[in-house]
Amino acid sequence: MRILFFFAENFKTTIMKKLTILAALVISFGLVKAQPFEVGTNVLGLGIGLGGHYAAWGSGYSTTPALGISFDHGFKDGLGPGVIGIGGYFGYKGMSYHYDYVWSNLYYDEKWTYLIFGIRGTYHYNFDLDDNLDLYGGLMLSYNNISYNETSNDPYYIYHGSNYYHGYVDFSLFVGGSYYFTDKISVFTEFGYGIAYWTVGVDFKL
Image (cartoon, rainbow, N blue to C red; front, side, top):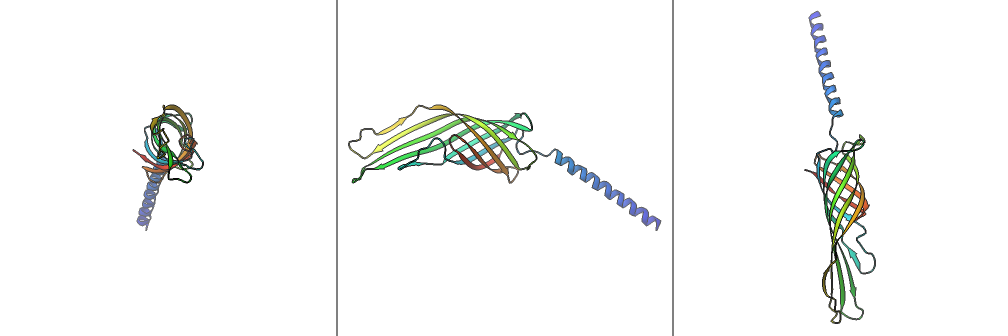
């Protein structure tokens, strides 16, 4: 009986030691777990946006959604629990106007095409609200190239063809959030002033 008690006590002690070690490892892993966006992280984003100040509203006008490709690199630790990112952006947006002459088959069309080339700076705020959530804000300095085209089947209309407007420098501000469903893929949404007021899309960690 004493021998059985001795082995039972040793077995219990061994199990408790292993459980203690396992608990310590779990706690340690939790303390050093990776944040969604860290120094060295590279993220490629594909988004589609609505609204924006590159648009016109009214009868005859139509605007395409803004299509954008962004890249963000974790550059350095920022002030507080955040990471500073730097990257680029390329966007496309189109706007058109159509007018049909009354009592005839004549028409008049205008089309504007926007190409946006930007440099973005971001600040990603890392905290323990959710391990999969990345909240950020930033600004973009961009060069906006605009092309313009007008056509009409009116024989008396003399202005036909394409005219390329001079590009100009602009900036925009934005805030957003990205939620990772896997280690590499997330969905994001952004709100800001620029090519779009509201953008949604998918991020991929490279």
